[in-house]
Length: 258
Image 1 (tube, one colour):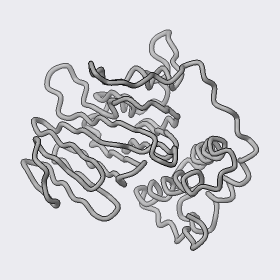
Image 2 (image 1 turned 90 degrees about the horizontal axis):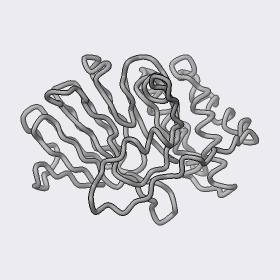
Image 3 (image 1 turned 45 degrees about the vertical axis):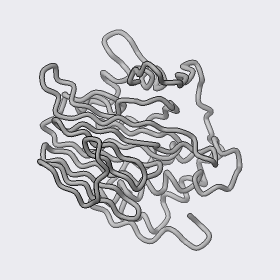
């Protein structure tokens, strides 16, 4: 099971909820939240890059007693910059041109494209034991993330609850009253892109509708700028998730598209 975040602040929890949360503080992405000994935690911090697009600035992981700090093209383990591939007690860090991958023997794989997209795969022994932006991994969408007991949260409230409090951090919480626009005028284009022949092997493996919705939000947010980030980030995520689900996406990028 995977939890991911990509592009214009989209998140998909282990239980399959997809939501947007534009926070720029440090957040708990996913952690083992059992009371006693916590096996791992993954924190992320986003910021806007020079083009005004959100990117992940760093990832901070704790795996048992090992601290790993990742930035683009840099891995720091327990305070020392390391050359990859790097292996230390049950943790392997690999880094290529595009992806940084971490394999942890305790049952976790992390994959980051060093820009906007992060995917964490967890062993199902962590079912019902996680917390953070990825949710509780209990197999039930919405429950305990957006509905807890009698309370219901919107995605911004939920995201703000995952903030890591740091005494000197200067970051504003996103406004919880902001409603997302409907963006329906972009449905046809997004549907066309995501049902292109290149993705024929993906249709039955993934929930197409949620990627169409994310693509529509991207188009809205970009206000007609023909910027590759606006179009490509959700299609890239769809392609990655399809491969991850055992599908074989065809070649969808062209000279003049993405």
